[in-house]
Length: 328
Image (cartoon, helix red, strand yellow):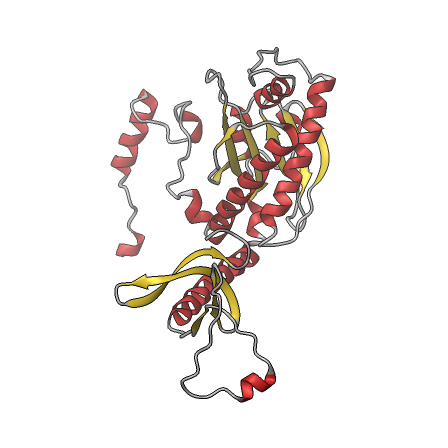
């Protein structure tokens, strides 16, 4: 028998293994024999998988945080400490296992992103906002899981979602023009079927800190990985464009630093008739009252007002204000 036809194990070795299995001394390699706590672990970080999409998403989150926090303060007089999220990838089923219930679960469409996204507002965000609105200290409220939201709480949810939609449109604007529309609203996250259980979603969590630190409320923005992946070329091109713009601005600033300007100081004026002007000769002395402040002119454009004086043996000026109206 040739080497290619030799079996991997001899008949004696196969009989020995079979005997161990029958005695229960050989672990069953089937998936059902794994420990209940067994779970696959990815060694690839979210930012490595997302690539340019992750960089863009982090910038979008920064912009959303800035716009949304400002609108909360100006529109709802609500000023919580809101932390900026970092994108994280997980299966949709894993996400649903840990979210609070009841919650304001808002299924949204964000074209041109395909499919649906999710905005989940932790109930304590809503309760603390209502308490703050009525003059309280933004305190949390303990409620039963089956409890829905009151009319006042629902009104706050409507307003808060409107502010989030505006903030999302502004946040995405440097990358793509978007529109955010509400598809439906639930209280139980299990009813929001934006993805299959094993489908990968990208979680962007914004944590809030309340005066009572016994609760840790948050606002979640969820996109499906597929919807972002379909836009990866667009997001990558925007990142590259931004990098190119930064490089161009850097070169422009460096070039501008080397450009020369002529600066003039206008210390006063003398009014002369045409006949007096025609009779001027070398050695004539013209007298005038100097202004309180002299104009500093660059390329025929007045930029500053300055006091005229001396510095050592030289005439000098001290810039005291902008000629454009703001204090210098």
